Image (cartoon, rainbow, N blue to C red; front, top):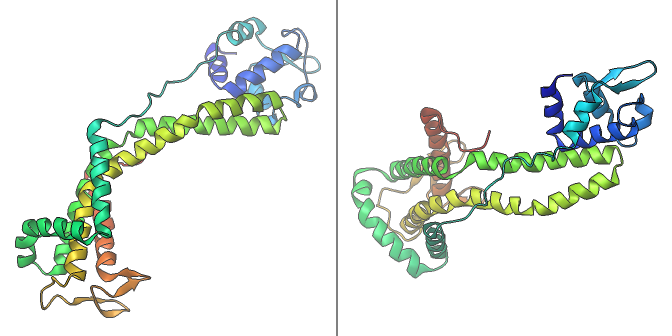
Length: 290
């Protein structure tokens, strides 16, 4: 049995428990064991893994620990706690961005806020709307929002920490499933306590995922408010009636095209999703944990 293999096994809390059971029921490695002697505490997969790793070797009538002294020395060491995940916290500017985004969202229901934001946006976008047809303006805005959304998500989302949170929760699930398989009530109780202690991980994951979304919405909501003001407020040019869509034919910008979604919203989302895919592949940007 290699020392590295034993150390690797004991890094897994579930396997550490399994080795401890084998050590105890073999009287410190002096007696041989068969599967029937431990099947109430170990899963068949764990038993097979111990044999495969060389921790258990064949004896006269069963299996025995290959190196009981090494197992005792290792099992007495405290279990590894794993990499500590630093709790996620928002800086003051993240909180300010979140508050501002909530105010901007109110523009969907408050005409005064919507008109104020849209009028300011219109000053910036007026040269573009004068030079391009409205469908091209929507396409340009979709590409722009897709670009900064992808860059902000890649910059602000800590994929390494998200992976650490997910791996921790996955390990707890695997240990719980193994404990249920072998009907180990004591192990189940310990794992449930660990899951309660890890409840903060869920909040940490939400904060990590929501932080880039706040900054994306801070820039995207004003664009949506302007588009809504432009279409529903009667601010389109005389010739800007709508699009010719396959199967649907000629539709106006306000007509529902996909369920209750208006044509301009569907066109924006299609352009945005396509541009984001192209941007991510072109710049080789990953926005999700591997």
